[in-house]
Length: 163
Length: 242
Image 1: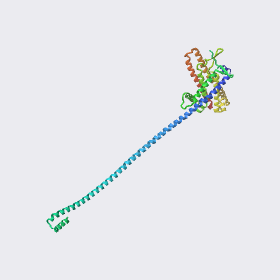
Image 2: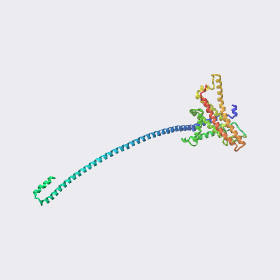
Image 3: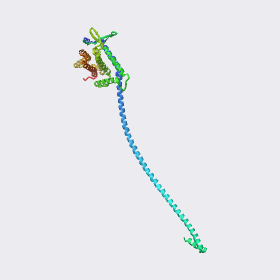
């Protein structure tokens, strides 16, 4: 103890430094260690959560991409099928219409031909009767001069029947 | 030139003597408390300025201690104590290098009584620190292993050899107080004496490298004190191999 006294140790000073240390300890604990350690821990947790979140987002994006590609492929196939179908049915319709149109035109042509034939026959008949009329009246005029009527009549009738 | 190993009393408040090292200890406490108050007054998620500095200091110190302890939970338990040692010793050591320390004061009986003297250049302070450290080491040992189990390390009648080893252990605990206190005190005090002498011989430029060295030693001593405390706590709380 004497030796310590030589180095300036005296109990009031010693106790004062103990108290000083205790004061600093509580001050720093309250104002420095606690807030900073809490903040470090909070930040660590936040970073961990952020990393986990980012990882999940990445996985989600990958999954979404895959789904997207699959969907796209499916849609493409479907669209192709629809187009093929449309072309097919279009062709069918076109063929139907063509067939119909040909049939109709054939019918119309037939009808027209028939009518033309009929008209022709009718006209021929008319022409014939007119020509007969004209010829007989002409012949009558001519023959009146040369033959008697009774004879003529017989002759003409014979001619007429001959035909 | 007069060099006093002991801290000098400069005045007394209500009959309590106040030494120059107590005064600087208060200044150190005031500086640390104020700066930490401003550092943590508005805690920000993205730190800047003094908050950033303290976060860096605390995180590095914690990492260093964790390396010795190997267990984060245990490290966090003793962290406030160890970190207070570190900051108090570091600030005191470096304050002793400021101009005016040991050079401004009153003459009494022909000797200069300086107003400021680094708190760690006083055996009272370092002895107080050493006592706290060793007592905390014992308490940690008892808390980790149980009173009787820990006590067996020192008082052991199982065999003459173990009894003798226990006696040595007991002595080494007291030796820790001495080595803790005199290491720190000796280093800081010798550094200040060295600077005084060099400055007395060549006042300009030449003391600069020594100032730099003292800055370095001040940091090393603070770290040594803290790490020794941590290591001793680690040893005290670890089950002894039989």
